[in-house]
Image 1 (cartoon, protein in one colour):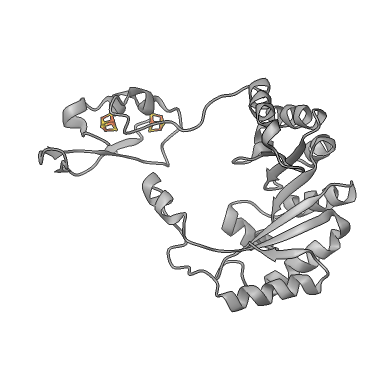
Image 2 (image 1 turned 120 degrees about the vertical axis):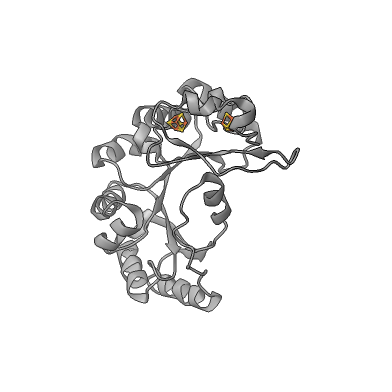
Length: 262
Ligand code: SF4
Ligand code: SF4
């Protein structure tokens, strides 16, 4: 939708406090064949202040997401209560909802106290005390295990895995219920050795594990990355084949785990 700085006067450029917007090479406008210069965002410099989105009258840059209070979020869920099937409820997701702990804690408590089933979708990468605090109000933790080798986990996600694994053990020990998702990404974490270690770890969590989802990598996110101007790092990765995924499923089931594909 960008009409080019020639037409709008570069409103976003003037609004950006950190010089994160760059002018691209002129290109032909699809509207009238004139030459226009669009902008691109340098993600390394962008502070996420959204001033560019407020300034852009062409709505080429827009903010997605909005602020909401616990009360408003609760009411929104509560209004739909009638439509929930038996066992339905609310999932608090993110980003990482534990990074906005006060909001997440209060919302989980309010939902739980009102009789709704509460899921918390978390990476497991937050202080242990916070998981203990929120545990009484969460019926099910949706939890990702991406790699059992901490060094490789850090290369893959930017953080080591010790805290994630110890939080999973802690939640299991204290009576939490876990639905564990294991993305299976060839060349990154799909080695048999890693899958075996993941299955062993999950088996060690005992009854706390309600379900394991083995999620074969797919490339559907690629277009979103391109749209956002992000570097898509899995360009050379193909989805795992069905036979490999079936064997992976058999492996988890052989540990007595309630596992399924997808
Ligand atoms: S993004 Fe909006 S404000 Fe920025 S150059 Fe394009 S049309 Fe103008
Ligand atoms: S969101 Fe990023 S690009 Fe937009 S004005 Fe703020 S710093 Fe600049």
